[in-house]
Amino acid sequence: MSFRGTNASSGMGIAEQSKATYLELQRKKVHRYVIFKIDEKKKEVVVEKTGGPAESYEDFTSSLPENDCRYAVYDFDFVTSENCQKSKIFFIAWSPAVSRIRAKMLYATSKERFRRELEGIHYEIQATDPTEMDLDVIRERAN
Image (cartoon, rainbow, N blue to C red; front, side, top):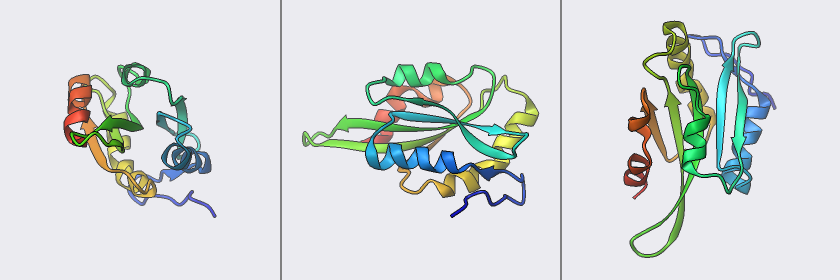
C-alpha cells in the first residue's frame, strides 16, 4: 500500500516511513514526538527526527529549527481533574515568521493532505513563534 500520492496544489507525497513512524507513536508509544520535513528533491514529507518516550516537551521544542518550517506530532500525556491518565496527539504546523516565504508557502499548501494521512490527531496548532505552542497552550487544549 503506497501513500506517495501527490497533492494537486503542491505535488508533495508522503514517504512510507513517515506514516509508519506516526503509527509507532500513536499505537505503540515508541516515540514522544516526530518531526517531519519536506524533502523537495523527493517531493515528499519525510521523518527528520524522533524523540523517545522519556523526552520532555522542552526537548521537542528545542528540536524544531528556529528559522525553517516543519510539521510535528507530539504525544502529550497528562492527568485529568478526575485523576485519570490520558494522552492526546497534537499536530503542529511550525512556520516561524523568519523562515523563507517559499518554505512557508510549500508547507502551507502541503499541510492539509499530510494532516489527513495521520488519523487519530486530537488537536492541531499553527505556530509562527514558540509562544503559540507553549506547554501551557498544549495543556489548556488537552483539558
